[in-house]
Image 1: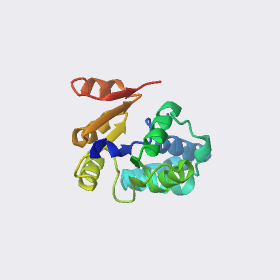
Image 2: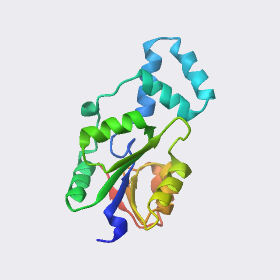
Image 3: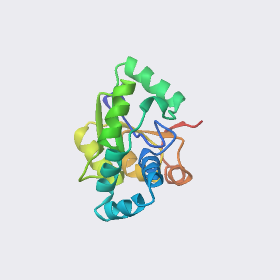
Amino acid sequence: MEESEKIICVDLDGTLIRSDLSWNSTEKFAKKCFFNIFKLIFWYFKGVPYLKYRVAEKIEIAPSSLPYNSEFLSYLVQKKSEGSRIYLATGSTEKYAKKIADYLQIFDGVFASDLETNLVGKNKARKLAKLFPNGFTYAGNSADDVYVWEKSSKKILVNPSKKAKKTMRFEKYTLYES
């Protein structure tokens, strides 16, 4: 197994799980009280990372009840048993990412959005390329992940959006769809 295949970085929203934690928790927060909509607007103007962080302070998640992509999760468990190092790399907040990582117990590390950085797209691509200069495998699902796939040695598309699939049509990748 090549070094780049021993390091697998996995997106959370839409890839490991079939939903988007940031969106779902924001929606849940907005529905709690009409005036929360104004808080969301205020937080948004302070930046997306700030908005995600503040919502995560107010809304708890239950990792055991999330809609995991079971086929892909089984693949990750197998890769882990074969000696791969697996990292959760997500635009969701550190709070949510660490809870999920603690629950699943297959990740060697977690990279997530914090108060300053929204870890998506180019931000995620730069971080992972810097951390793994000898290469890595990346599993994602959206057009934002194209920037990361450009830096990765091996590409895995998990239930990709039409735009992601179209963008990657000339690339070699492994596909998980369910």
